[in-house]
Image (cartoon, rainbow, N blue to C red; front, side, top):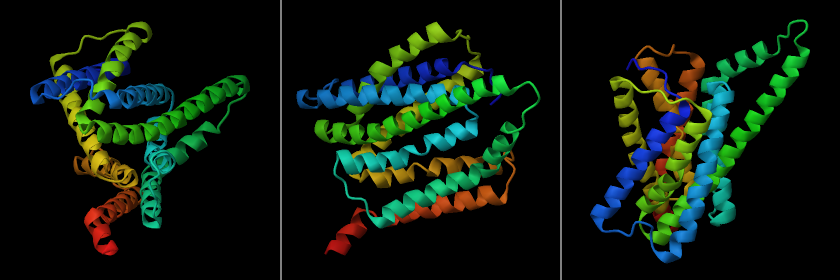
Length: 288
């Protein structure tokens, strides 16, 4: 859809606000406690805080890094989630699950390999008299990379807290509401202080609304999936987002097909389908 340029924090504020409103209405309609049971509230508060740190550090990195680099950094989060689940939740990591995560991440690298290589080569071309400014840009770039890694680490921990909060409250929707109640006002404050509000056109507002609603259902389904399944498996399935985005773009002729993109998509799809194959039923049969 042809839309105007909307500040990033304004988009985040719209998404978090819609998430907050829809989760509140859903909880009220179902008669569930809004803030969850008393014994789970510390977990829910911690989940909201860690999720907030992950989201806004990602916003910082995506504003200062090329989109491909920020995307690759963000998709280290499933790996961080599996490591965090091993440490925090004591979940066992099987060799097949580690291999699936590695295969999916290699798929992401294949998809963005050419862009990352081009950016690395172009970044190495220095004109005379630009050494000082390059050092400044290099330090800013390194800070943005470190913030992106911090976003992935906190995102991985957030997966574990979502799982723990959903299990403790027996209601995954509460974890979504707890995040929205902190992230929505925080995004509004950041928008007020760091960016200038842009009044969206009808099409821009419609697109933002539709994407915010879809993001809400994605968060609810992610929380439910984490409640039902091992963190490493749910995290690996998240990689299918990259493959579907690339295939969708190539289908609409917005992304030029290439060998690297196709190989990356195949690697991710094979890994995800294999992860789905070794699900709970398969494991129960193996144990029996």
